[in-house]
Every structure is written in structure tokens, then in C-alpha cells.
Image 1 (cartoon, rainbow, N blue to C red):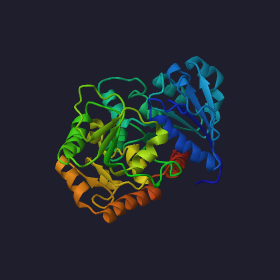
Image 2: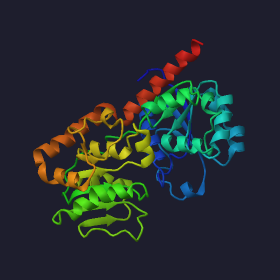
Image 3: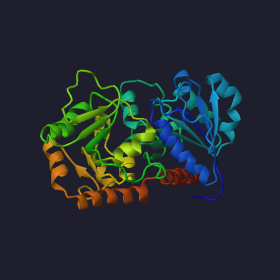
Length: 363
């Protein structure tokens, strides 16, 4: 990572609370690694009651956190932090994001970036004229568009929406939190995810149908908001809530873990979820649905297994011996450690900063 310390100001949804959002995990990993590399980060977060009541990281030691009440306080008290930073990043879903982003782009003297942790959702909102935190007019104002989605979406952001520079900055994993550990194997296949209407049909197809076809098999689903109307197969346990601190043990107690992708991310492609990286970092072999670009993250058949039906899922569970099962998981783990840790994302962010600075200087 570049040796010259950078001043980076981030205006994000939340870093203090992981309650009901995946943004905190992403920001914590990257900011921690930026700090480790000698850079100084200030994180500005709107103080809202739902996060205030559920804070699990009040005073991080790897960045300065400032809680602000409203847009007026932000503009009146913290303009210097925006003006003096080498880079200012505004995240998706920041309250009053369009007003915040417009002010940042007009105020900042360094590189400005929009970090979209929800790219497929953002694009769908723009198409229906929903400008909750980003508008078409604001996109060209940011020097850099950092996207959770890569592939053709980056070209779309540049050519259709006018971004001067769109780059992928995928989610990642912290190897210090997710790693293989010796625990009792309690299930043949597990799935971790909050209920959603679009993920339920593939969950029933890939996991429920496999469970129905193998009465001796043991299956588990962990996550909230599943309707009471769901009929769970007899050999499928449901855990209503699993706090992040227990995720590593959950993965390690399975022979295989299942990944199911949201419909909007399948349509966009090139949108790996953090669950993929977390499970792989634990060395647990993954059975997943398919989407365009998955092969750019994992080698299909060697590092990840693809299923489109309960029968295919069941074939993996019953026909692959333990030696090959463990080898698949280990190959995926090595890929993650090589390319998809929070340290890799922090380095990519710094590289993008210098790329954009170079472009701006040559204009």
C-alpha cells in the first residue's frame, strides 16, 4: 500500500452498528486495513435511533467516528474535514444522500467517490425515478464510482450515467474473524440468510427438495423473518436469529454451505455476496446458484459447486468423498486469502485514488 499517509473522510450509513445492515461489516474491514497501513480515516455517521439503540462498535480504535444530527450540523461543523481530505467517500443509503453528495462534490478539494454497496438496488431505483440517496445528475459529479457490482455494470455507469470513472470494489472478509476451526459437524448442508420473497423459491428448490429426498440428511437454515406459513421439512432445523459472532462456528459445523443470490444481483451479475467470502474463508465448500461473473471469483467445479435443483444438491452431498470435499473448500479458501480480504480492498481503494488523481492532474 502507498507509503504516504492519506486523510480519508467517509460519510457512510453506519460503522457503529451492524444491526439490520451489511454496510458496517464492509466499512469496518476496509477502514481497519487503511488504518493498519498508516492512513487516517474519519467516519461521519448520521445519529439515528435505530442504530443508536443497537450499537456494537461505539468507539473503534482504527478510525475517528463523528455522529451528526442533521445536514445543517454536517455543513456547519465538518466542512473542514471534507475540504482537507485527500479523498471523501459518500456511501449508499446515507440519509439525504443526494443533498450530502452534492455538498461534498462542491466542497471537497480532493478526490470524491460514491461507494455503492447496493449497486443493483441503486440502478433499479434510478430506473423508477427513486432518488433516495443518488440521482442521475449527481453521478457525473463524483470523480469515482465504487461499485459492489463489476462486469458490464461499470460500463453502464460510465456510458449511460456519465460517471468519469466506475470501478468495482467488492465486499470482502476479515481472515482474523473467519477461518477453519475444529467444531462438531452437525449438518450436511446449511444456509444463512434473512428471508426474502425472491430467495425463497431457490431455497426450497435447492435445500428443501434435497432434504425431502434424503431423510437421513441433516439440514439447517439460519435467519429471521421467515413466515409462519413455511412448511419446514422434518430434517431441516430453523434458527431464528444467529448473531455475527456465531457465524464462523455455524459455517464450520456444516459439511457444505448453500449460497443463494438475490434476483436483482443475478440480473446484474458480477455481484458476489459477503456470505460467499465468509464461508470460503472458513474452508467450507459452497454449493451455489449461478450468475454471470461467478467464474471470475471462483473456478466452477473446483472451488465452488453449482446447483440448479435438489437432485444436483443431493448428488454433491452423497457422491463426493470427504477428501475431495475438503479439497474444494481449501481451494476456495486459498482463492479468498489471495484476492478477497479486507486488506485487498483497502489496497484497491488507494490504487483507485491515485489513478483518479493522476487523471485529474492531466486534465
